[in-house]
Image (cartoon, rainbow, N blue to C red):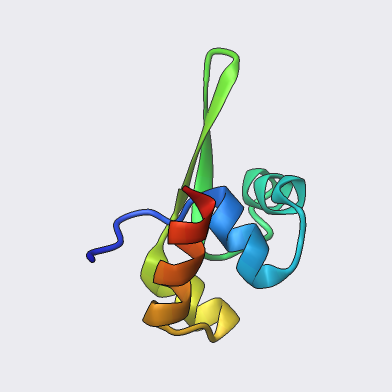
Length: 71
């Protein structure tokens, strides 16, 4: 499985934080592994798998498992 984007729900689960924590951290540019872009009234989130794994220390297998659980 090639991971192109980490869902906010999976990132929050690995970090043991709320989804809101991850979203607000990305919006405030406090989390160095992704970006939040606002389109009209909606915000789109991108989390780089490589940068996320480097930041959290999780493995690709752990990340894949978290993504599968979040689906």
